[in-house]
Amino acid sequence: MTFNVEFQGLLNYYSLAHNVAKRLSLVRYLCLQSLVKTLAAKHKQSSTWVYRRYTRLLENGRKVIAVNVPREAPKKPLVSIFDAHSLVRDPYAVIKDNVPYTFLHRSELITRLLKGECELCGSTVGIQVHHVRKLADVREMYQGRKPPLWATFMIGRRRKTVVVCQSCHQSIHAGTYDGPKLN
Image 1 (cartoon, rainbow, N blue to C red):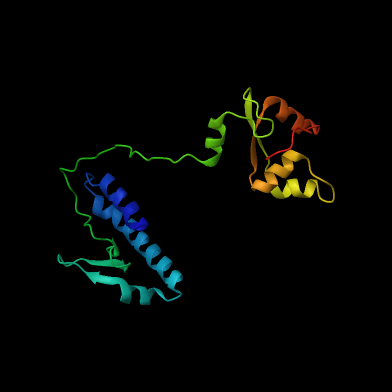
Image 2 (image 1 turned 30 degrees about the vertical axis):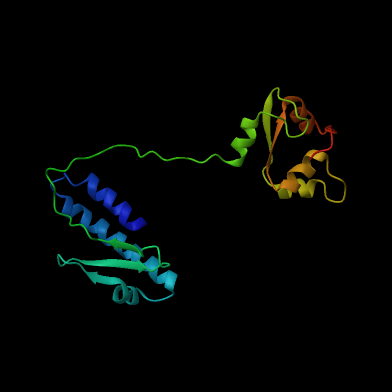
């Protein structure tokens, strides 16, 4: 599907060009070879095996690479076809440059930030995020001795971030945090 969508995007964009077939035939060939080699590597087979197994003939006479993945009873099988569209110029093509709307789910960090509360002391003033590069660094830093409560909090939750107020954040960086017991 990915190879087909990317090539279809190029084909739609250049469909008004007078030499679209000449210029995009090499791109189509490279995309097809990349698709075949990817499928061959996935199945641990040769490229010839992929061509034999997945080449289909459409009603209009075009040879395509079609992959059909069967699924459970209520769902229809997934069918992906590469190279189903011709490289013939379309002088009446309409290019739609609309940016698709994508709904981004809130991450856990954003939810924690929107709560607006320090996860260490409960303050609601001057909320910031303390971030470490790797949790392994925190574990190594306090190996053999008891880590401070903020480090125990991060290690226990397996998170590289902790939402804190400004005073807790400054004391963490100064190495002097000895705040209340964390939940």
